[in-house]
Length: 116
Image (tube, rainbow, N blue to C red):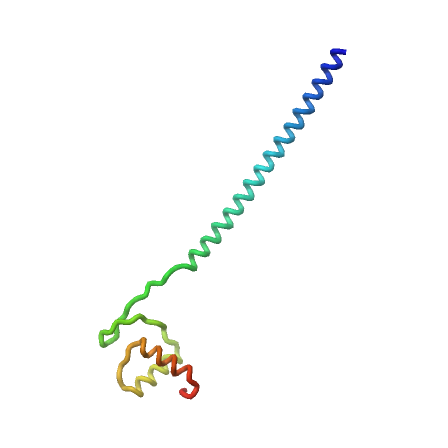
């Protein structure tokens, strides 16, 4: 009887140990999965941050001066239509104006449909 009981106890212990080992294995697997997920998330975040940084660069504004020595910030690099308007204005007024004034007036001119 004692021998039988001892054998039963041994079997019970073995069963428990196996269950514990299985549980430990599962825990380890879960931990690994969590780590992998975290790593993936971190990588994604880093990529996003880099993209944001690229977009947020500030351009330094250079102050320029015209022939009369007036300082100004160059507001736009004029395209062809804008340049034509500037030339037309200069011919009409026959005097040199600063870029800022020209820009404003050329924009006004281009917005009104009568002047070509």
